[in-house]
Image 1 (tube, rainbow, N blue to C red):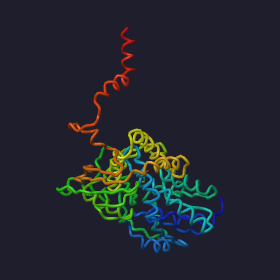
Image 2 (cartoon, protein in one colour):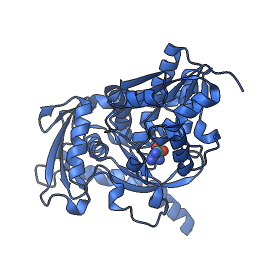
Image 3 (tube, rainbow, N blue to C red):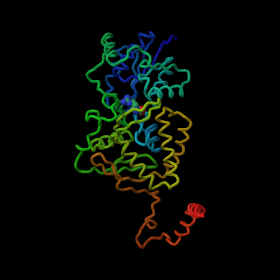
Image 4 (cartoon, helix red, strand yellow):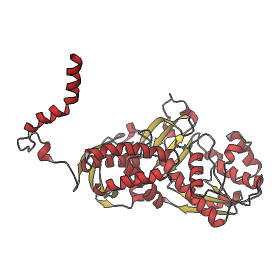
Length: 400
Ligand code: ARG
């Protein structure tokens, strides 16, 4: 075994990473420094430093990355229209490259040879952590105790924690595995593993069941300025706060619940539920404004970009040259993404009911069925004749 003197551990303060912290010290005799990034997981991080130190960390860092997360990770994905397999807004997948960047930078600053994470050997997150870490620092050693150690169940971890006086509050652990940040909540395990079972009400963390949402619709007006959400209901919000606010308003109205079976990078199909009120509302607003301001060819091509982009993010390839190149395309399209979208939230549904933009390509004089129409209907037959010529030709030749 290689001698490792210092390890920086991605630490959430939960059961797994608490036990890992202790285990790493035992196994490697190394100094362990913890790193916790605040991406808006809605959990009080005040005590985390103290908890890490009580568990044996040499130092504990907590970093607020909410702004960077929203501006540098969430926003580009939103502009790209990135929804994995058409639905998942990628909250967890977008958080990982940023957490890993923080981890690697801290390891470099602290001159630690290794980083460690608490991901299992079956999921996507191990892939994201490790691919990102190697992309940023090819020499760094990566430790994944959950894949290697002898503890094979939660119960054993709890027993290990009790034996070694590791402070864990087992009563607070839920039957689900939950990952949360500002862009959404990912929930899996427990009864959710039965793909036929409707998710129990308690599985959801931040949304109200649609049937219990208010009986009156809530209207929202979202304003964009060159691809960046600038105002909500006429009021200026920094992006972090705008997302928080939309999570609140959307959550109350039962918006953003997603129940899906998805294809993991490692080849497994998994059933996961998500809650992403702000993401669902914003994606809805963006797609609608695009319809108004982008030309047909660009919109259609952008759909293929969106799919590829979502796969790259999901598959842990945030720092790939291709994602960066696609970002270039997306940025170009955002120049005309200014305007307002009016949305109606009602018992779980989010509907666009109005849109306008100084860059609107919608020409009412062309579209109208009224007599003011300027569209030359006499030009249509010639167009249709040539447009349909290939099909007409096939038919004529085959009939002979
Ligand atoms: N399936 C999601 C993804 O791969 C979420 C993974 C983490 N989920 C969790 N409940 N811990 O991005």
